[in-house]
Image (cartoon, rainbow, N blue to C red; front, side, top):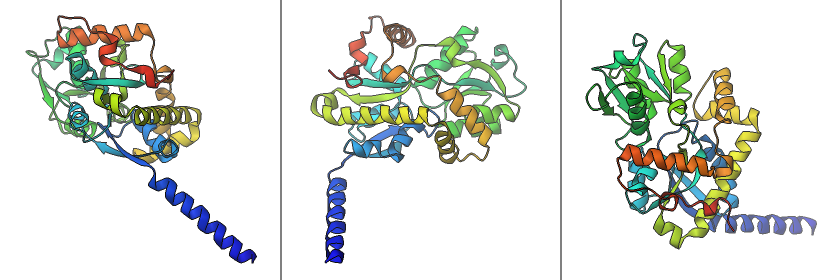
Length: 314
């Protein structure tokens, strides 16, 4: 009798688990690359935070500005290509950033070892990921701030993901590009030169955020709320569990050097946005830079590009 009861209990638990799994709503997330910025979202997926909110998340690699096309075309529901989402929204495209992951740029502009200053970049080729994305905006800002005309003094090439930019610099196809850890740290170990840290030029700008269409906000607020909530829980877990997160970094980025993963984590947790919603001063800085970089004549309102109601719902 006890054995029969045990079997019935196991069957009931199994059926309940199957029913719960069947109820998960499938959603897709586009990320430009697997890097330190997007790892907290992957941890949220690995730890089951999305599942607890009723979502089954598929993560797809889609570079930069193509992520905006993907959300507009309903190929994906969410994109972390925050710079491209911002630029599109500022131009009137019906998309919004609903949460911010990292509150300032995390990239270094790195050059070939023999190039020690900006003037030596004249006539050289500079790599970016895609046209109109964050990499291009920040690269242009740094070059202009150091006396170079991005359209005349250098040639800017769109080459794809960070892996592609890494290979291009190592092979000599380009002379400089911006990189985030671990690639920046790896390049320094190989003798490449740091020309600039992007955060010194642009302290107010999101690198990694959750972008969606206005249509999704109107029709599927519950799904967005669930995704934002789970993402913020994943980020919080990532920040509070140093040892586990370092192992996760090493595993996901296929790093054999534990000290490199430790460096990345200790640096990374200093640049997160506060609970996914930045300050008003930060918002103003982003809007000012976006308007200037896109050469827009009209002001950009916060409501035009942001909807933070999902971060602290009323």
